[in-house]
Length: 130
Image 1 (tube, rainbow, N blue to C red):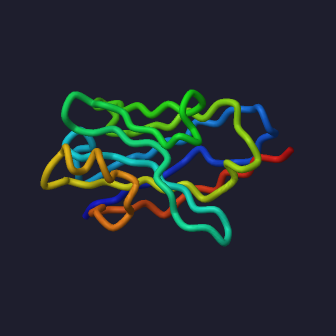
Image 2 (image 1 turned 90 degrees about the vertical axis):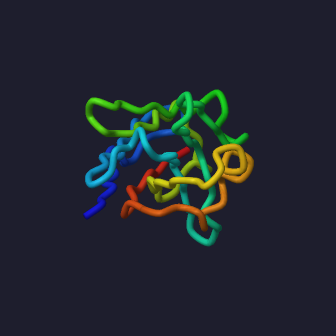
């Protein structure tokens, strides 16, 4: 049984930092493209950051570039999201997702689409106050 379990969410003031972790079981995270999504109340789910299998290339939404860093720990089978310089607009439920794309290059052009992922976690709440 595949499980993705997120942890590390919480409340922080603007400018602060949080580190989210996604623990995978039933799959080997290094064999999947792993992506963090988020969904704020009343908004669509959006891709935040991803790490692909081939060469561990990282992908980021423009809104988080330079502030968020995604990384993978193969020994622990986890994917982390370090979030710095947090803003109130980063407030959302953050989800971890895993995909095995048919074509890695097509995937990297559309990684933010949430309809191509095989597995999802339950989410962890991040709240940033001003």
